[in-house]
Amino acid sequence: MPSDGKLRLGVNIDHVATVRNARGGAYPDPLRAAKLAEEAGADGITAHLREDRRHISDADIDGLMEVLTVPLNFEMAATAEMQAIALRHKPHAVCLVPEKREERTTEGGLEVAREENRLAHYIAPLREAGCRVSIFIAADKRQIEAAHRIGAEVIELHTGAYCDAHAEGDVDTRDRELEGLREMSAYAHALGLEVHAGHGLTYDTVQPVAAFPEVMELNIGHFLIGESIFLGLGPAITEMRRLMDEARDG
Ligand code: PXP
Image (cartoon, rainbow, N blue to C red; front, side):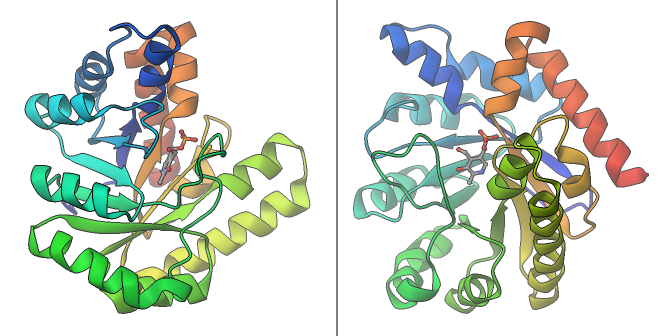
């Protein structure tokens, strides 16, 4: 997504595909959700093609590349198979995430520091193909510096620990996690990285993160898809957008 200073919202549609796949049919259709999200003001669509194809399928990615007018943020593990798929499609952005088969969701950030050499080689052709490479990492100086050294343009900070602490009512941990996110957003920005954030964000947790001036984009999925059962997808997104703008302007 281009950098125009406004806080952008990327809507992750993975869990529309999760519901579809629960019955193995064609609905609900993630492409329809993506178009609706666009109409409701999403600045981009995020989709994670997992190695086990548990939600988004290869055909969904083909379809998204065809129908979207906003940028696609293609989330993937740093494997040879995914690199080939990304190079075929050349999405606007590629976000590298760690992936474990047994996890329910992306549990932690990518270990960049220990895999610096391999990842530097891995992302080079993606960058040459014109994809903005983003790395999903914990709010940790070592990982941020490594992401910067390998040539990533963007980091996405994992907000899961902050959101979990909030949900558990553990105020000390929540505040500590939030402070870490704040400091590391500023640190990464000062290095010249574009800063995104996401994972587990809800109406209750989005505003403190949206208020960080260095954060340019939030990627939000599970809560929005869940909320759309009650409000509809468009209104659920509109409310998230409103809260983000309020936090940013306030
Ligand atoms: N950003 C990244 C890199 C993710 O892996 C995910 C989850 O797929 C999200 C954002 C969105 O998280 P959630 O679905 O919890 O809002």
